Length: 324
Image 1 (cartoon, rainbow, N blue to C red):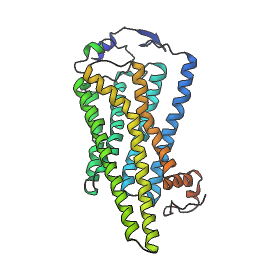
Image 2 (cartoon, rainbow, N blue to C red):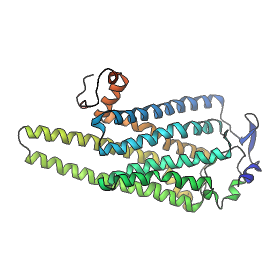
Image 3 (cartoon, helix red, strand yellow):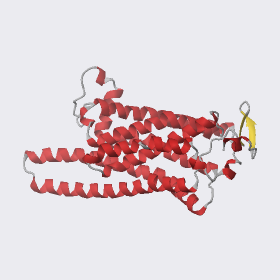
Image 4 (spheres, rainbow, N blue to C red):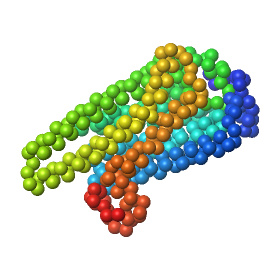
């Protein structure tokens, strides 16, 4: 398969010191705009998710079962910012792959692994304490699964004609019909259904709990119960917003990937560039949503960025009541 790529010359141009890539009519001004957008996105992805990881590991109040999911999600998003986005940015800006065919497969491996991992982690909200550890372990097993698929080129079986039309120094992500359908169903459709059902259930239980507290709690118990409920509600709302944004950013991928697999048409490379970056941006916005809609995380970020955690012990501080 690699040899068929090397023999291709369709729409290829020689550029960047003997690299042969698909012709790119992007002007220098347009390229500068792309760089100005992409670099801050990568920086925010890395810094924001690193901040989330440090917050959960440092502050005891954030070390809850719900935030175990948040921690793993932040680690996956951090790896997207470190391992995926910089190389994808070079490919998007210059329409060329400078790192060889082997690393192209490795990059595609980690790209699909980490993005699918984020999807599966978000769907873990519907599981119980008993199966939480097993489900998280299952999520990380995506790493060797996608490794086998991309490194052994199982995703390219039956696509020899398409491969023959690819320039030597391109790095396309091609999926044959069986793998594309399996990835769409188990990596998008099923998790989205689970997330929708789970948050419907969470919303219903939250309303029932609120009515129960209002009708049964008395005196000082009311304030204590409402305080506890408020904290649980805050975490639930934050995760709900994250899931909603996730579905919005991943919906283009789901729609195009599904219709391509069913009807056999091929979306333009430009369309796929936008679609791929929508999925990457999901890793960028998660820590922003934590800071915007969750007071404990917002205060944790403040304590870290202000340097106050280095002057005295704040590990056990009440993050709902931090003096700025």
